[in-house]
Image (tube, each protein chain N blue to C red):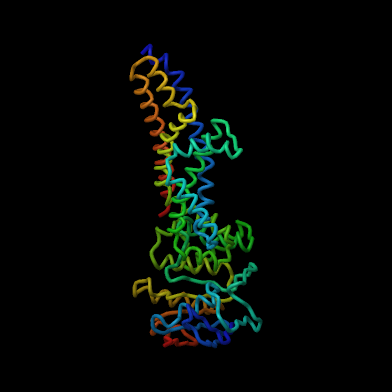
Length: 213
Length: 211
């Protein structure tokens, strides 16, 4: 117990980094994902091609590799990020692609009749999107978004590769120094707590949206 | 009065509507009948502006107008779809007041007052706060009618209003349509149900499939 209280501060500070990556990625990637998802269903072909190539790159290569490219590769092209910004940039690029795919699916699940019905009522495209389409899409995509949110909690551990001190790295350091698995056990428990909170919040959200079918 | 002059519509080079001429007089009911694939729904979609026509002209009270581009906040034509297309995420009341508040810029209070009166008139008084999934087919249809009426259209179109309903509800739709006619609503009804069409029509248009 004494040992636990000794290593806990470093684990908690690592958790801070994990949460920071998690929140900022989520807050920026979800709205971006909606925009990119909308771009995927426009009739302007060059845009959809461009987006498809982007999504293919982001989903087709490991996030770990993308982190390395952003931090070590982009400076060659004159774009220099500090470690934290590089991590955030890579995560946002990657997660936006996944969210965009999910939103595309949700958008395509809305029957054409809903748009036509809005059109004969003379609603503008923006009003239709805001009042009719997006509320319905959000409900449809919530379970899939939830999956990605849980993944994001755990994926954030990849930032160790560019030298950021997150939860997993804090555990790793303690394990190597003290030659014991206890820190890693604690790391596991903390991840479980984080994902449990996410799961709970997502369940509540799904319940909130169950007032209509 | 709505006049169609030489309305032509093609899909991929295939002519669906060929030089349709038609006059719908005020306060009257026009029914459009014919077998499946004859272009009944296409004609209705052209009138309601959901399809661009390839030729011909629309005249409203003698003035040329284009339903497909008319977006000047003047909802001339209301539509009740075959499958109603209520917005599932909004309550009955919200479905009705959405366009009057956002498009006609009515105050929320005015729009709600009018919506409640309209709902009352179509026997939906107690349903204002329900969501569409909680309604029966006939109730959904009446909400769709109220939603269209709330925009004060000059003309109300129905696409197959009896097809999604139980046979005994046919009579009810008939009564609503005739009631609206007495109140001065010009209506166009597309249907394959000839007895139904005959019982409400002032004027009937038969469309035949093109070869």
